[in-house]
Amino acid sequence: MSDKRQHLVDTALKLFYEKGIHSIGINEILKVAGVAKKTLYTHFESKEALLLAALKQRDEIFVQWLDNRLAGAETNQQTVEKVFNALEEWFSGAAPELGDFRGCFFVNTSAEFSDPNSDISLYCQAHKQRVRELIKTHMPFSNTPLLDAICLLKEGAINTAYVEHDPSTPRKCIKLLNTLGNLEGADS
Image (cartoon, rainbow, N blue to C red; front, top):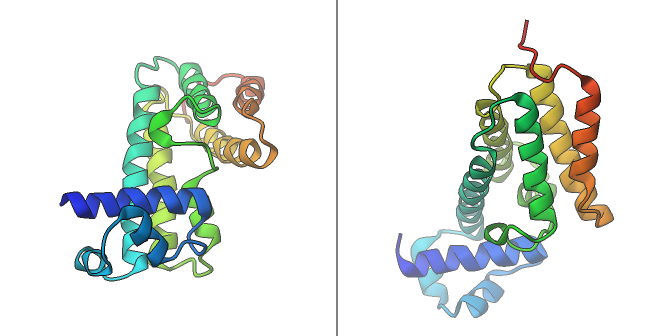
């Protein structure tokens, strides 16, 4: 990837995540990036193409970050704790690779696109599925109901932490999941 293309993606991702998609125009991205419009259109055919590149980059960063945080789990209980401890780290600003916490970039982006079949919406859906599969790979014992609960609570924790400015929501999720009992039980 060329340096200018990467700089445009970095700039767009930062601005889109901080301010939203529709509130950021191409001219603001160009101004902040310090590049000409011709350079932008050499690398991207449209704002949507630039957004897709930004989504891809955020997906790669987030999945790698979460994969690193989940490594070494030897029980499903440890996976639960690692998922929600990682979220608490992100919410409290202790995950610099994810930037200042502004909620989920994929949920925020999806909210700005009304067509669920658009390339943007489909990419956001695919990200959520990749995260689910990643968590599943870190669960030593297959347990689909637990996986469903982790993923639903993860989404709820992200939204609650952002809307209510409460970085402690992950601890509540761990407690709630512990009340389910038998986290290690395999699918039947």
